[in-house]
Length: 333
Image (cartoon, rainbow, N blue to C red):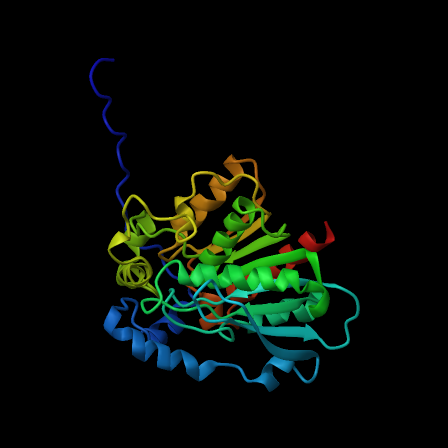
């Protein structure tokens, strides 16, 4: 063939996948208080609302089953110290596996108590220490502040493993949404900077790709939770005018990594009816193509963070069980 080969045809993007029948009524109520299209002007109000559900020390302690402490790790050069929330099973002895957890919130909201109740469920069932990091938020603190804080906290946690009763060879990074993207970034950093040998990475509906141009992003515009407009808000807060450009670091947007070999085993899950579906599926596929281990779940009709907003729904229970089972198998291997 002479000349330039034509571009392969692009499949048309159809309507959004239907929401799960049990989840749809929850979403209808939720949309009245949390619009899918969050814009920068909404950030202060959304932050105020998110603080209303922050668990107390008593709730974290779970009737004395956990000892709850707060510590600080030295921050990056010239930056503040990094607050860590540490929950350890009270009666456990010996070095324990640990989950190093990063909260969600689109890079613009949340703290180290946000979303930590599910990691505590894992800790309850499997005897784990939970260390949850509070990273600085965009737009006040753009990249690399969030990932630098998470990295500093991880290094401190591993360096102080004996003091914390943690087995440094069984540390798993985990996160949801923005925190899932940060967990994926830490897995890359640990590989590329000779960091801790992580045991696994548990990525729940992770926020991975600043380009925001997938079929699922297009399909879910104006739909569900955290749509394409909200995603643009979060990524632009983090990256500014560089969002979507040629020089975005994979430690900001892990979908930009060109090499996914040599990473710890991954668990990735996402809803079929959410913005992040295609980038998360692609991330799992690229790990497999590089010869790595990944378990992928795409929950049919699930909107973003459906299990957080509808925890009693049947599919939410299935998703939580799948994560716990993966952790159990990982720690037995």
